[in-house]
Image 1 (cartoon, protein in one colour):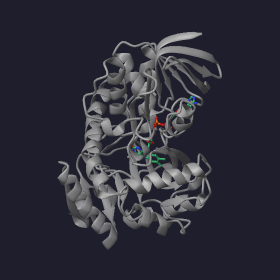
Image 2: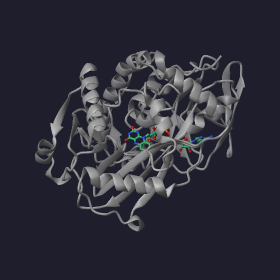
Image 3: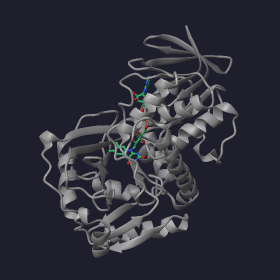
Image 4: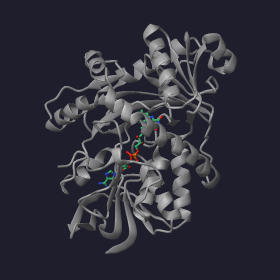
Length: 416
Ligand SMILES: Cc1cc2nc3c(=O)[nH]c(=O)nc-3n(C[C@H](O)[C@H](O)[C@H](O)COP(=O)(O)OP(=O)(O)OC[C@H]3O[C@@H](n4cnc5c(N)ncnc54)[C@H](O)[C@@H]3O)c2cc1C
């Protein structure tokens, strides 16, 4: 049986960042990945670092809006109607978190996680052997009409409340700041602390650094069970034989719920499917954008432009719905002048966001098994907060003390 200090299950951005900080602290680390390295949700996403995402997914108004959108096949949010007890139980918990008190409690924490991570990206840019196109320029949230305008104003007010720099800009001002954007939107909110990068290059940089440092990384190695003894994980059972480690980290994205279910640990999770379309073009904004009404992200990534959007709760299903891809493509030219996208020359991708019912990730040690740490459920901010999540995992494992209060992220919060 293979023996190591720490086994990490999952090689998404969260697992790779945990490996990075654990290795830096002197641990011998092995990563077990059932598929290809960083091939899950962490590859084709919008690559935004988002201190501006300080409102959790579970917020007042989301359910009413979601119900309205459910009957529109091109809407940015969709719940596939089905009788599934896990989905119903998740929706019940989600609805209980959709209140102002929960939002107010979560805002400073989400801001702190994103801002701490934003700083860690600087260190990673220095250290990693691959340039991952990190740009700390800010982001524009663009609007077309009254509804989008209200969203921008609320965003600016909320951002200022949590100490971020945000300001409304007119169409003319945006055109002066970024002529390459060819802004057609009426105006937008400028969110100064947001940033962007190319996710696949970031993952590649981490992977190369980890390999150079001697971290063992095993693709095509599925964890099939966690065997326990005396309140600890004694063995990690895999498709390549068993592993034993002093510490086990579950960073399996949306699949994490299933992994710990047999241990009687409940981390409710639904897959929030999203799509991206990436294509090479010279016509692109310098700044990343969020399109308020359409809920589409537009990110310049080196020579490419990536359009990303939709949130479909349809189970762990990666099939591509062309109508929603077309809806993303149709939205963009309303906000900026861009070239028509030739789908045959574009990369179309789908990924499953790991969504917890309260919109907060699960990060922490299990109370039931003292050598088990979980880092999963990051939903829409998993790239942005991967570095701080990895650092927190390393702090938890090394001395149990974390640099910030993460009690709201407790992994046992839904367990009996
Ligand atoms: C369209 C879209 C746009 C997005 N844009 C952004 C953005 O701009 N900014 C941002 O911060 N976030 C964004 N996200 C969200 C972000 O991509 C995710 O939150 C993040 O990638 C989750 O990382 P992870 O490491 O937890 O999961 P994953 O990347 O899914 O990694 C989990 C890994 O665990 C492996 N695994 C699971 N079970 C097992 C097992 N039993 N044995 C071995 N291995 C296992 C999986 O194969 C997978 O590789 C976006 C998501 C989507 C879909």
